[in-house]
View 1 (cartoon, rainbow, N blue to C red):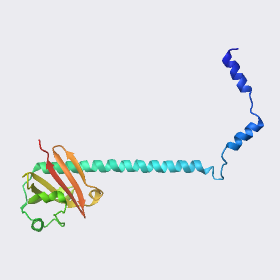
View 2: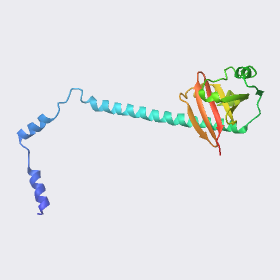
View 3: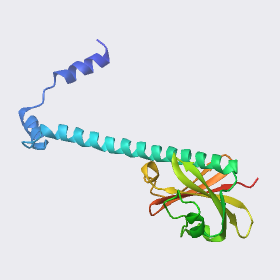
View 4: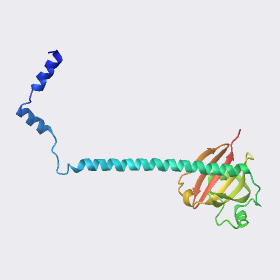
Length: 189
């Protein structure tokens, strides 16, 4: 018989004494009367936590892809550079000359304080009537486009301002009150 088999047979033949078994059993934690439910409860909590994490991940992915989709649509309109329907430098007067719009066009966002309004036209954003406003940066003279549309449906779900690149256009977007704003700027080459 080889040495390994001899050692194995020796240890297999060993039986712990009754006193040792009682000591080992005493060291085991007492099981409560609810113990059969603990594994089920633990699995339930684990499943719930997993569901929450997966839902949050899906939400962030959906919001990110929604933001990129909006930025792409805005960039496309911005690069078309269509003629203005109304030439006007005052937001209130421009709104009165565009009667199909039933929302205010001006924004209190600090980003827009360095721009001058040149005019606007009707357009669609996310299949909703929107205002496409041509604005000019006062210092640089760069012509940019500001979009204003009621914040409904998926646009209302965007709760934080975002900036996205869409080709050669940078889009800064935010919700203000019940309106969604997006500023499109052609990137410097």
